[in-house]
Length: 513
Image (cartoon, rainbow, N blue to C red; front, side, top):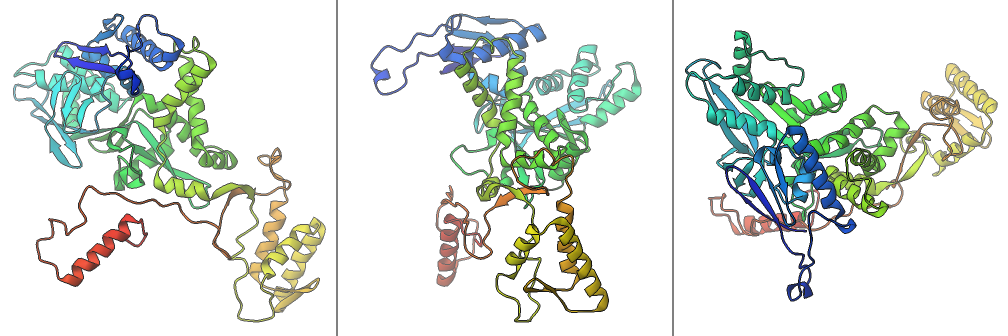
């Protein structure tokens, strides 16, 4: 369903176009759609209009909906979450970073508030009309708390410090620092607000990914701005909205405080989470604090838990219960889909995971080579199988015998028809086997495995044979295959040939390139 967007300084108009999809649709009359009497086939638009009306009531904003068009104000358009806005034809949230700078002290004659837009550290000069930005990447939208602060910056004059401006700036600050309390009558509050607005940078995130540890026991969270991502290209962790110290601070605060509407990354630097992504981030933050088994299950399939949270959120909205079960499922998938970003690195991790299993030690590290030749090639596997089949009392007796042999300085110990090394490594393995047989409360109800022990993700490994290879596709670049223009020095023939080889390797996703 397509809307035609038009706007001026006072309002935004969204006109519904006829549905003429497909080749035959160009020559036949389009399906007539009335916004006042939408059917179950238009389920996503039904939910979006319900959210639009609910937001308008909450903000006491006027909205007009006729049979083929929607007319609303810029403040209401800025207040909508990303999924609702895009569904009714509004632009997505901006991927630009807002930066403010203050001159003078708020309330004095020399006070000025300047606003700048940045992308990748470079200043941009988009034209703004209300909540709509005309950027080099097309039309984009600013959130309401940001819009109000910009309007204050543009409206301030000498010796002007009325209550309306103060309230707008206070709302802007409280959106970033929810616990702050501001008083218009306090001189210290004016100084604090001025300091806050000086050198302020704000970026937005409306999607998240996870970066699991090697064994899948834990993960870190990566924030993304969907507007920055190319849906046709592979997304990597390097495309996240934050990097370096800012990313580490975000991840640390998420673990310490859980899901927040805004994260303070550094003095004057914030990451704000779009309202549509709040439910997803809460689930992800909760899973970081969950029991190990629950956390591992989440790492294997994050979308399932995120989709459940989105569905619970949608069920609290008016209009959702009126949809058919099939329509509800489609609406949930449409809302939850953009919230989890499946990166190239996560895809490689998930491709290796084949299930779960009881931890049985590291078979590579448990029995390293001792330089002797009396050990059979499959010694480790054979020993582990026999140890697992031993009753617990016999396993305890064997552990005690190994300890005695170590105390006596003996090199080996006879175990059935195998000579076991009498060292701390063997003793550690036996201790681990005994500990894994002690049932814990967290594992007593586990019906997926037949014995007690730590549950880990089961992955394909290449210890003996090549059982797994990462799925790699060709890379694409907007830059030509020749020598880049940035290289001013004329390259020799062998250098040009070497550069071409590196470019070809990079296109084939060779890891060394």
